[in-house]
Amino acid sequence: MKKENISIVILAAGKGSRMKSLKAKVLHNISGKPMLYHIIRESHKISDDITVVVAHQKDAVIQEIGKHFNDITFVVQDTQNFPGTGGAMMQVEAKYDKILVLNGDMPLITADALKGFLELKADIIMSIFDLKNPNGYGRVIIRNNHVEYIVEQKDADDAELNVTTVNAGVYAFSKVILEQYIPDLSNDNAQQEYYLTDIIAMANEEESSIVPLLVDEKQFKGVNSKKDLADAEEIMQNRIRTKWMNAGVSMQLPSTIYIEEDVVFEGECEVQNGCRITGKSRIINSQIKAGSVVEESFIKNSNCGPMAHLRPLSHIEDTHIGNFVEVKKSTLKGVKAGHLSYLGDAEINEGTNIGAGTITCNYDGINKYKTVIGKNVFIGSDSQLIAPITIKNDVMIAAGTTVTSGEIAGGNLVISRTKTRFIKDFYYNFFKKSK
Image 1 (cartoon, helix red, strand yellow):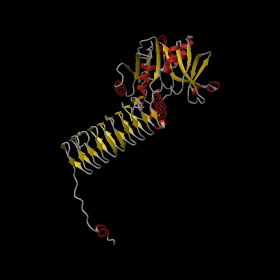
Image 2: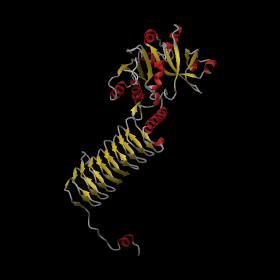
Image 3: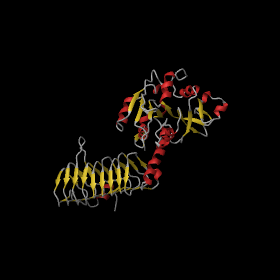
Image 4: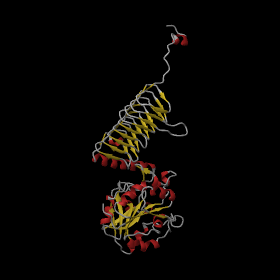
């Protein structure tokens, strides 16, 4: 998408008390990324001049967003002396003659949804939407496609209360308008805040052009509570799943599948119901079966699950991971691990079979150690491999064996069992029962 000559200001200074959380509202995650991230990502598609106004937990917000973007201007709002949306704009210096003002709690906005602000020509463009039940919203009074004024519900008369057009909270201003009216804003109101919406009334007195822009409520949805957060997550997830299904990924019961922002699919993939795929996972020509969890992992030409768990930094190629197998920070190439195993900090090579109940004992309570398993190794059920350990090619490990640290030479059978004993009639004697 073409970059436009427009500056974007994102207001992200609020506390978000209705979230009932110690975390700054704009840092609550949706599909694996902070709300604010999604807005900046879409803003970047149309502008190279983005300013984020911060205040509450400003250091945490700047640090987190700095992990994802290095070309953002941050402005710290003096909320003590200049509170409110108008106060937030007082220190902003925009590059272009048109300034789009967004809110940091609208993570569902898309670059396409912002096109209307680019296409219309006016001193002020004000976003609106129509609600069947506008209760609680300020009403926007429009005549002849001109915004005359905004009235808060508590101040509205009966005629104004019947208006269903409400303020969506996003504006585009000409730079001249802001420079003219920002200094004249007053905080002489019940909240003692400087309101950006007061500019509408000021500009009307000077007969400036103020036009409404009808927008999609879903895309301009504000997130003010945990319920709003959950609703926004559903919408974002539907977008992500739809994108990948359109790209050729098969999904069974897609509404039950969770896929984060950074996940990438390539080739022909299938994701079954109830799966969760997170982080920068990359899945190529693979099948993720029902109920499996994949975290920050690479999977190629493989199938995982059902009910498998690939923890971060797992690298799986040409491999079968079966039900209730957990893999963590391990590389498996050409391996079969069918049932009930834990493989952590391991490197396992092609042709190797991992029996049910096999565990790599990678942690001694202080340090983590690596397990290296060669090619064509057969590991029997219920075996424990105590790291650090290296098992060379063509080794057999008998079921129930505990393999201690060291190196196992190729071609060997490893077996560790006590001799089976039979004590005649022990059952009857112990329970004092007759045969």
